[in-house]
Image 1: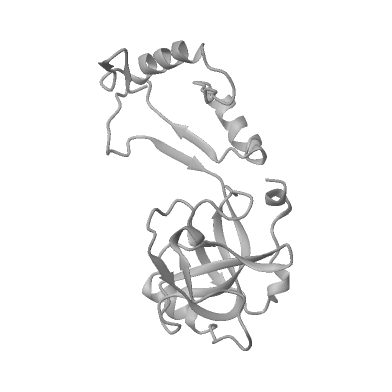
Image 2: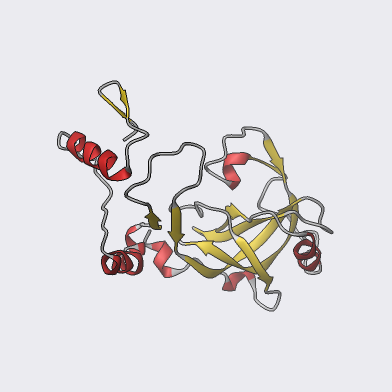
Length: 210
């Protein structure tokens, strides 16, 4: 709650802003709902372990006495991550020094773009480049895509140039949030897995249900 009845509430502590929000929410109807809160650590730990299958990404930890401070990262976000294998079907930047991975998975029988990686460090890019080769045959992806194809939260409408490569499996650390067709957040490259076939990189069963 940032303001109520024309009054700025940002300087109020979180406990009071939450109380105001709960009062306002008494008149809400679905699909509006309040996110759950707790001050019990054991309950929070239980939520963190048990709720990811329902689509809950993790916890946001806040101080009850804290005012709202715009533009400042004063909350702690605790998210689930897991190691998954995806298919690197393209990169951003030259094949000899890629700056990002364009990740794919086979969905409905087609290799589809499901996300992008965080920017690669120079050393990571050089190491990955050892396993990158131009496509041996016709590639299913175009050489230019919309920014939203790689990141659905990307507001940049400018097309992004892709350097297509022969599909190779890579291991990444992924936020467990899955939109149903793509990862909601950037992936972190861990290592290339050239010993695996792209057919071995399948969507984890937990995500299929998401």
